[in-house]
Image (cartoon, rainbow, N blue to C red):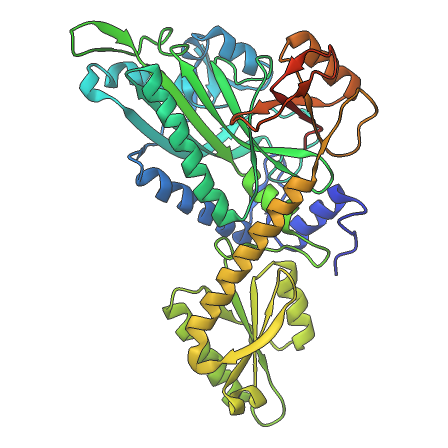
Length: 468
């Protein structure tokens, strides 16, 4: 059973869920570099699949760049290295031989990819260039590590694009938002798009849009980001092209990244005091069948459950029969912890009546449907579960935000307030609240008010929170 309640101690509850649902093993002898266990890795692979589908259908090509980056290339963009110099791992030796040029273990891939982009991009006919990769990145996380949320080896998706103009790069940013919306619908995750402050944007970026979701403890988790670079990287890396008039120009670039934090967000947003609650699209097992066996009917019930499992799997529903020699109650508990969306029960009485009994993991709703209609009914129930989870998650996200009008002690929520966008007032807000100023909404939300520091009229709302 789950010992720690979610509302009483979210952090300890989270750690317990990760362990008991067998999502990750943190006992590997390097802190913050955890082992993906089979169940957790299947969840991550489903996320990767949806990301690949969206990127492939929007004209991106998948690549895989080397892990190591020469220090000479890493240092070409001074703001970038300033943002990462305290977080990178260095390779200094090959065997017993000291390297002439130190190598960086990839913290992110701008400095690995862009020397190659300067070779690939020659003409306006080579643009736009749109590539992505799903790889591991490495950062020396100095804060307390937590599975999926704060780790030192990070499973990471990143897309990189080059364009012939700032306007076309901006169109790519807008396309990224569409891709994001489609992926988040699969994960049933709500999010906000906040344009980061100049002092918190990605090193080297013209602007950064953070993708944040509200966690149950009143904090936010940044699950991704989208960056518009203008020519801030193309100039130092000489990524230029000959335009239609024969003039050489530097490309405009964007990037879009998300990480395994998506798994952490799914755990935190959807889980409950019984364990994990998985959106159907992510669940390694979407429907678990529990045979209800009594004396003398084992063969009949087992044959019926196996037949039902074959039918559902043939219909594209990931299904499994739990035929272990355990009591039904023990099996319920086992699969509830692991967040299987749909439990199906089949006993002799059900078979005689031509019915299947079901229970939804997300809200405990129970009922029956006809065995003859199992494929259609199971699919409909899973769709209903996804819709209900997404709606409930968005409602929690909305109620996690509280408007404030003065610099008083803040509640444990995400705060929304008037901000004039002056850096001095921004730092005052962070210092007084002891929060991180997340930025302003990327899309205009119709806000009108006064800056809570200087009182100047503003049409921009600032958002601040403590982060995970």
